[in-house]
Amino acid sequence: MNQNTSQRTVICTTRDGGYSLTFEAMASPCEVLLDHTDKERAIAIGDAVATEAWRIEDKYSRYKSDSVCGQLNANAGQQCAIDQETFQLLQFAQQCYDISEGLFDITSGILRKAWHFDGSENIPTQTSIDSLMPLIGWQRVTFNSEQYKMLAGMEIDFGGIGKEYAVDKALMLARELTDAPMLINFGGDIAVSGPRAENTPWIIGIEHPSFDEAHVVYVKITHGAIATSGDAKRFLQVGNKRYGHVLNVKTGWPVENPPSSITIAAPKCVQAGILATLALLQGENAESYLAMADIQHWIIK
Image 1 (cartoon, rainbow, N blue to C red):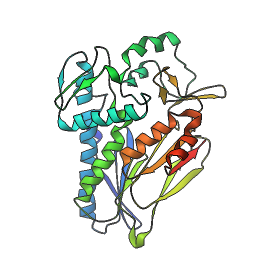
Image 2 (cartoon, rainbow, N blue to C red):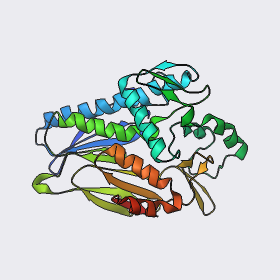
Image 3 (cartoon, rainbow, N blue to C red):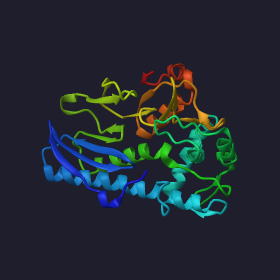
């Protein structure tokens, strides 16, 4: 989650039924689609949503040394004071770790020092991966409502839940400002306030993982949220083998044979996001995992 503060602007354009407010946050294009005829009101809502997104980016980006995440990482090995919002995010990370039986672990982000998913053939050495594995392990973290501590050398990364969390927070804030139909989209993680006029759905395109194909899958949504996890933009390619960016924390290597993309519908964006990631972590068993859990989903293989 990173954005140059000097580039923080919100652009308002007209669209069928209202306005579109666009901005950049968390290294992603973001937009608010608002079915509202008052331009000034639309701009105010767009500004409020963007400000909330930037607040969360500034607070939890691992790229910012003065963020909460940056400070916790810089002070690994020491007791660190945390606030209530951070405590709640850490509790959610704990729940994700528990229900995934350790596959979802926010201490695994340190593997980025070995893996660089830039579309190249640059597979890291096993030695470089092995050197990082001792620094992974949520079970080595202790925290309560006031303090957090992890072993020296460890790091955490809220990237697996931060953007979805920001979508939910932004929607909650925007709904306090207007009851107009609204869609919030932060880089493909999406939530809506309800159906559009006359109870019609929002229609959303899901990007195909192959850059060579223009094919887009469209889904309809009237309530709740959807989130997508996949290797559309972050992967390595060696011959015919594609290495997606979702890593198995128990091996340090990408999950074997996952679908290219999984989109999940859920009441909250943070729920949709973690379910998409948990399904992807099942590798070739992702589809059966989702079928057994009776979760509405769309898979691109």
